[in-house]
Amino acid sequence: MNSKNYIVKLVLCLLFLVCTLGFSQNTKQQELEERRQELRQEIQKINQLQQENKSKEKSQLSLIENYNYKINVLNNLISVTNQQANLLTREINTNQKKITKLRDELKALKADYSAMIVKSYKSKNQQSRIMFLLSSNNFKQAYKRLQYMKQYSNHQKQQGQEIKLKSEELQSINASLLKQKAEKQKLVTENRTVQKTLEDERKQHEILMASIKKNINVYAAQIRAKQQEAERIDREIERIIREAIVKSNKKAGKPATTSGFSLTAEEKALASNFVSNKGKLPWPVEKGFVTLRYGSQPSPIDKSLTIKSNGVRIATEKGAKARAVFNGEVTSIIVIKNSNPIVMIRHGNYITAYKNLSKVYVKEGDKVSTKQDIGEVFTNPSNGDTILNFVIYDQKVNTLNPSEWIYKM
Image (tube, rainbow, N blue to C red):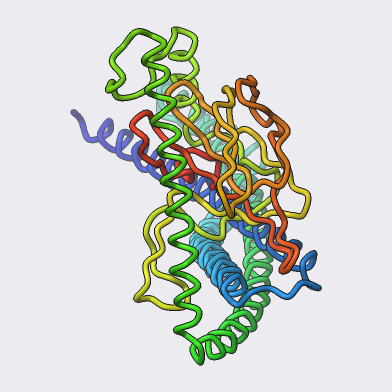
């Protein structure tokens, strides 16, 4: 490989890397902006629900959960906004370096161009050009001088065009720089507001925690009682699912001990579609936010206590409708003592459970479609909380993390 080809390939590689880096930064900035808008909407939903229930006397535990969740979202918003601002800072620095380099290049080009113009002006006399040609020793030299004059003229034009293009590029980068600085300032200003809100929320949280710690044993007992009640309900749901599996296998002429439902071809297709939509399923309520996530986690008031959640707890608005997250069949309407109705929907060999309903719009055996209303979520009259508990089970009666199945949960 000769040196000329090597240099050309090296330049092309560098250009490719620069373009790829620029595209990557733009993509990252877009992803961060989308995430920032999602978090802002989340905070709006929290504020809206808090405003709706402002007149209600909430329990200390409920308030702590709300504060913890809101503080977490605010922290995430600050983090994402900082990432955006830092990325903009890097882009601003890159553009400032480009501007400095372009200005130096323009200065050199203009100086070179100016020198050429002066030289051209001095030799612009047509007679001097003719004499320059006629003074050649032979025809070959005269021809070369003529070619030189043409090349010199073309070089002048190219220099002028290059100055024009670099000037336009400089203007474009300057405009981009001003826009980036304005965007960064907007982010910095917004972050200050969010940080002030976060400080206020933390102060309220600290005051509430100080009050709770005076009677920590009472609240710890309440948490344990709620956990025991949740486990009792979960055991009953699991028992009903296992009974449904046995019934399904008996109907198909299979042993009752067979793991999972006996599926028809239609049910197999439904289960396959359910799995293929993992991460894209709609929320089981139109508006809401998760106050308790899936899995084992420390209690918000006493870290020594562990809360086990088989699903998610979603706070929503009064009168909110629970809706099916996918096509399926209602297998059970469960009413357990000291608990509100639960609707179970089967999607092939997967089941979704919608707990804490005040009204039920479906009956056992009904075919339901995605986003179809199946009931109304119960609103606690004493504190105004409207909470839906949502759980997903597989064919082995194992619980699954809803945040992995529901879109942007």
